[in-house]
Image (cartoon, rainbow, N blue to C red; front, side, top):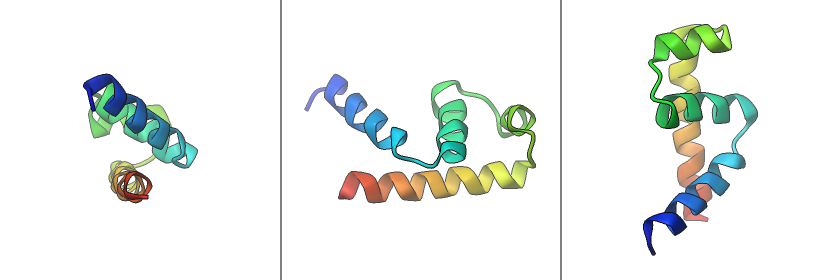
Length: 66
């Protein structure tokens, strides 16, 4: 597969995430924001952002393996 196909597969998987996980993941991995910046945007704690990103990564792994 080429990079475009891989990116398309990844973004379809990201789109299946729960909304708050999707937002945190995109802000972190696509936009390159820090946990502090994401916590301010989402108006939640840094530990909540860490948890959201951890769950997002686990969910993406399950989606992509399936």
